[in-house]
Image (tube, rainbow, N blue to C red; front, side):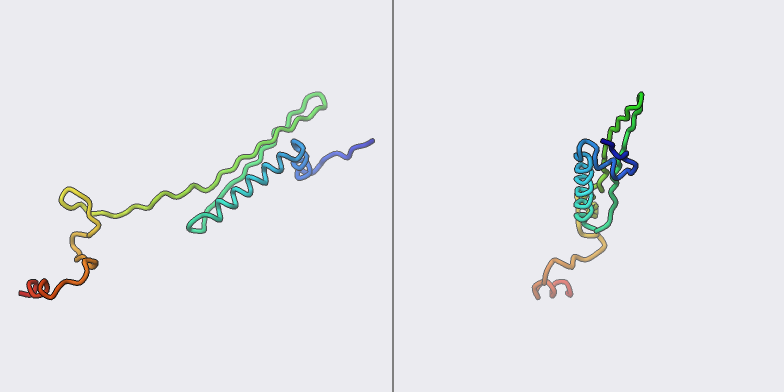
Length: 114
């Protein structure tokens, strides 16, 4: 019985470790796509690296595969601006009026205009 030699990379990857290596590559691809689709700003990159180490000795060829992936890093929290006020933190800029203090009573308005 004669076996046809493997000459295509895709065919070789498919038979490595009885197909388990191709399954592992598929898992890395799935995780990369999930990470990319889950990005809050809908933009990012991922990389999948497949390495085949081929060793030859006296007519025998050993192929050792490995797969690694680099997924997009999760973005941390953005900075929250504060202003220094009395030795502490304030969310109100010192040169701006507080727009969110709510409506003032007519007595308070009268005192301000007097």
